[in-house]
Image (cartoon, rainbow, N blue to C red; front, side, top):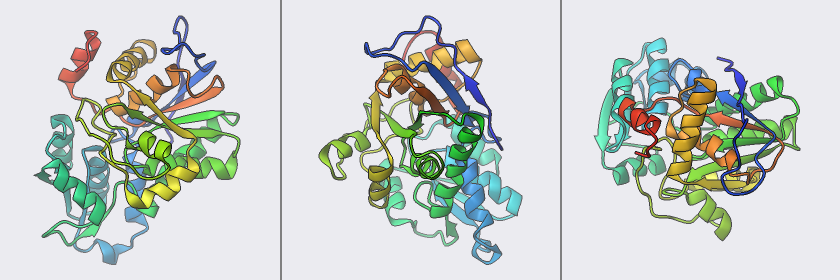
Length: 305
């Protein structure tokens, strides 16, 4: 689904860190996808290009929620079984959505879940594994977001993309590099889990302390080894924001645009409002809108979960 590009009203909004905010901020509303997240694009492309023989034993993925929903949604369309390995901190809202879509949920400790991301396998599951980040077909599906941005805003200067594992940002950056090489693509991370920023500073993959938060759709303790060559080449940098800045951005998006973003999606707006990405025409990818109602209520009350 071609999602809308909506301009954010910045009247009275100042950069959060004393630098000039972009003169225009546009929101790429991937939260309006049927599953509430961009992940449907990669899941669709991976399964559509796999061929029926590879789908005979069903599919499985490792996901904190949104990719799981994308794969489950597509598995139901293809009529095949779906199983999802999730970390034990995955939010109830996303787990309930996965089960509504007919997938079997396997909950494991975060460290065990991360091993599935690294090894691409899980004991007892023999279906087709769809990696939520590094699968080339998933990355290519994500790249369609970049093409849609150019279709709706051909003179875009900057795109800010929430960074979970690099599949979304590298897909968008690859598309933009081919069609508008002057546009810069920045990742954004939260300070409680920002391995990309640390790795870019060090010049090599670097592990960091991971602290779970309401921004559950992005962040990890380290980078996927296979993604480092891509993201280090394609991205202009990583903008790190605080949880308070994300909560404030989420409130702003809701108040000004009547749009509900999850923490990961709002992180891109928080990053733009620091002023660190420059003053040009900026698109913030609202990667998803699947947020727990209680956390949303807390944020609307002016607090940070």
